[in-house]
Image (tube, rainbow, N blue to C red; front, top):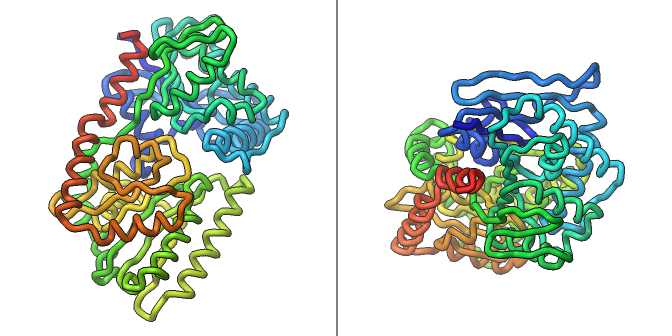
Length: 455
């Protein structure tokens, strides 16, 4: 049986996947559930001395092959092009997108570096599965070196429509490089349609079902919505709610209802509008004062990017303003926590919370939404308030769907969730759990790898 070789910008250390709230590390570990192989990428270290060396560590199910980056490569490729150009572009945020030809050159350089370091580790029959926007060009660079392995690409972020994609000077180069992969996977049908529409506008481009031809190359373009292990999350939540930390949270709430949000600190998550809508809730529905607490967990990320430092300052100011205006001697409305918690701890917090508040301005999927649902008590479940622009909204039909740009609408969504009768909550929970069990993380892995193998 052929090996599976997974490539991503960052390779998580052995301990890291256990602490995350989902995301790439959990997905990659699931990819190896029934396949031996190798996970290749950056080790998170910056080194400027000597040539780049790859370190291979063997594990029980799969090995990890990692390498450092130089400071210049980190600045141009990661901070520059990946996080300051591609990330805002892919999340429809042209207003914060920054572009530099030097950064674009660094992106090409690091993709080629990945190819040069990976190629000697590949076997002839390896399946290569490349993840995310950092490595659009990797498949192209490997093919230029003469490799003929089957290669698939999965994008964890949204993919913008053609006219927006054109804001990036390398838009055609990106799409051309995508067609060096045999399978191009997206989170939602809308993301896949955006690429297919770009292809239809090309001279010589054509689309037949999920097969698209562009630049003389044909690839399978399809949505493979990523998911979680719902029953595992439910078991974790049931256990976690009995731990000391969960009990401390319950005691601190003193019978108050909890609204919870868990997001990486990022402008795409719409946290400022979330805070503003909660302030509106307290203003327009005063019965919630003293009886509802909003806990937003937002671990810092990408602190070396200016826009991230700015959003942190904005949120700290908003939290201080709201707490200063509404707090009483025995109640603080917002608990704003700039720290991370293990997944098992979060599972307990989710189970305690009456409302899961997940309102990104644009998101590829958002696994926190799915984890919140799976963590609920089946006999007394909470309610998910979910942005219509999260990929998860296409699956979680029992959520209260809101427009994250409409603060009044979000306020009404919160009030609806807080006042929802038990029967309605149970019905919505059961509907969403049925979806999560039908399309779990194992199903996502199986569907993509079947497509990659040409099934």
